[in-house]
Amino acid sequence: MKRLLLLIPVIFILGCSPPRIFYPKEVRTYKPRAVKPSKPKEAQALKPDNVFDAAFVNVWSATLSSLKWIKWVPAFKDERTGIIRLREGYVYRKSGKLLRIYNWPPRESLEQSAVDDYLEKVSDYKSFDFDKPFFSQESMEIRVIRLSETKMKVEIDYGIRAYLYSNKFEDGIRSSGYIESLLLERIRDELTGKPLARKDLR
Image: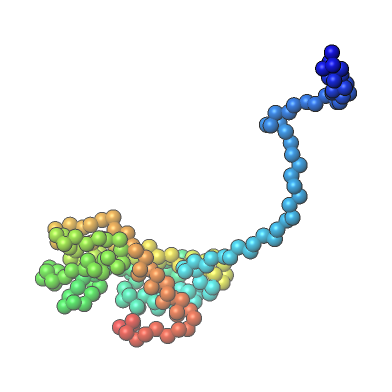
């Protein structure tokens, strides 16, 4: 009886309280805390190495001048479209010196030629002692593209094929970007007025 009497106030308090409704977690809503807006960080624009702040005529002229460094003769150039196509060339070694010519290299010269070290520098070619390359057959197309009146992009498409001692071409060789990066560096030097070393123009 005493226990019953003790429960009466509890029942009375519970009966007077407003009914509580259970809401599943999925449908509950919360007020987000007020977050102090932060100042957005200024994104630093990365300038690609092949984009130049110069007029088209200046970049075009600097590109043609820079081709003297790699001693590669253009076969086609159209300033209107910004395209320069170089003659298909063959690189081989004669008396220890790398040469670029525009006809199939003579067989007697090829017997002493090996260009695996050169190819490892300018491409992803991996040398094999049992089948080294005599020479490489190479092509290049350059496009000077107008991004705006004062901003130009120079795209270089450099193709390489290695001719092996087994008298066959090794296709699927990709450029390492070595020649392209040096050529773009020369273009930048030309545009900034930095003099080129005489030995590079011989």
